Length: 338
Ligand SMILES: Cc1cc2nc3c(=O)[nH]c(=O)nc-3n(C[C@H](O)[C@H](O)[C@H](O)COP(=O)(O)OP(=O)(O)OC[C@H]3O[C@@H](n4cnc5c(N)ncnc54)[C@H](O)[C@@H]3O)c2cc1C
Image (cartoon, rainbow, N blue to C red; front, side):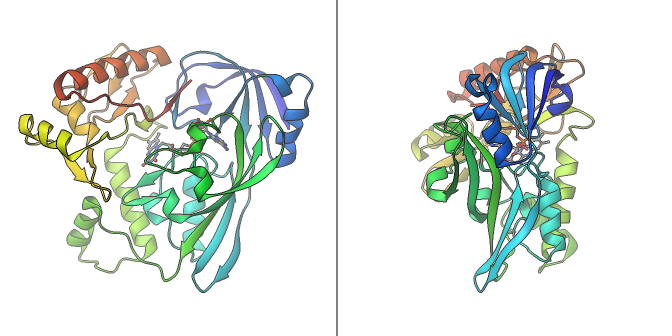
């Protein structure tokens, strides 16, 4: 492990927000994490686990010990009649890992291409896009407990995956450092094309049986067209979760706002498009201080240049209030506010 002091976290969060980590420790293995736990000073200090910083809002300097997870490596673990199991170190870049699986002829993750961040953070909020969620391809993960220093392997049931949610946001938050994740990629491969924008690509191109790489290319093109590149404009992707309501609540809202974009869920509940609600409240393209709402997608808050975390949160609260005032729905932030 490598211990550094007084580290600026600005380059380590995609919003580009300023904050300083009093102590930052880079861990490259389970043994490194255990060393942190056994360390005479670091062991008992509060900790924050950092991946690629693409789903956090830093509102202040960090007195906690920041553990930057840099466990690398990727491999095909086994192949059998029902599918392949692949594994990646938690510090691997997610998108590069997806591209690597495709290059190896191991399809299944293509709909999740170009999501920023690391492999280790992917189970934390059960990342999802274009009709696929991490839990649909999950096998198991390895983690080290920051209190006991013990390594353990968790299967899906213990991770309690939900919509942008898992046990790593609850009882295991800040307690369990994920060091490796294994994915089950089922055979025979089936394309997932039910998402509206992918259906449009099929119709536009006339390619009715796309390859996994073709789907990845479509997903990349769609994402580039509608989401800001954090290298150019600081952001953390979707800032709010899409609220899930009962059919009765949805009918009530439709009565007042017939055009509200909503998706029926398999369990009978209804997901409302938070971006549509924010847009309907007139926020798209607006700026408050140095934070703003992205012009092409109202669900994304952006750093207009030199923003600080509290400005982003002031804007987020103003949006929450106006959405509550009009629709009676409380929007919940998706990124972790630190
Ligand atoms: C432009 C853009 C587009 C995005 N699109 C999507 C999308 O389509 N779908 C989607 O689901 N998300 C999306 N996101 C959000 C983000 O990319 C994911 O949540 C990603 O998994 C975060 O990874 P990270 O490594 O950057 O995590 P970080 O931001 O570093 O951390 C996020 C949380 O995970 C915890 N954590 C990180 N690493 C570990 C670890 N190894 N062990 C335990 N806990 C850990 C942190 O403590 C923190 O609570 C987008 C973000 C951006 C900027």
